[in-house]
Amino acid sequence: MLTQAGRYNDFYGRFETLRKIFRFDIRYRCRRIHEVLKKLQISNENISILDFGFGSGDLLASFPESCSVTGVDVSRSAVENAQKNHIFRKFKKSDFNTVPEHDNDKMVNEKYDLVLSSHVIEHVDDDFLFLKTLRSRVKDNGYLILFAPIEEPGYIFFHVRNYSQAGLENIVKSAGFEIVFSEGSMNINGHIWKIITIPSRRNWPVLGKTVNIIRLFTLSLIPYKMIRILDHILNYMGAGPRQVMIVARKR
Image (cartoon, rainbow, N blue to C red; front, side, top):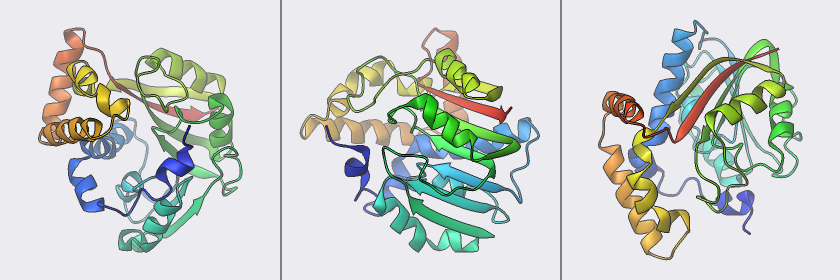
């Protein structure tokens, strides 16, 4: 099986403009993070932030320029792309480094006000150890923000494991965090799309990429506020979420 480092080593930097246009899910997370932080009365200014598995860097770039931002990723191209990105030169401080895929603890050994990780935990060898490693980089009374997919076993073949919202909450708590916020979302990205996008999730030649483009194009046309409304409606109808967001305080 192709490793995550191998899968994403040369992924970033190519078609970056198109990716930003169609990745409605990333835009959603960027906006939702700041809404939730405001709701919880957690400052998003003049803080230090670590994003483990920062990818395209959009989550970090969504914070005010008064922040110090650090990103680590298994992908060489992610780091190179971020280092060249003029957006990060405006921040108080920015630093980007690679981390070994199977030894997450070999990353920058500093503590941060806020640690982010979006759709990474389902890929790591040991999710409890991964969370303990992230906890060791959180300042006392600092916070962790975690996004992960909610899916059935085997839905995406290269995910090491799948989660429910309650299951992820439990492991976050067992790793030494106190949950202060948890919600399911992205209901619109499941159900009918779950069936239609099986070819892309199974990595079928040609057809897989085609249906994924259709999915991304269609969902990217829906404004953020409408996604929130549709999620509430689908949830009321019993169509469950496809993503969980957790904000947790270090105990």
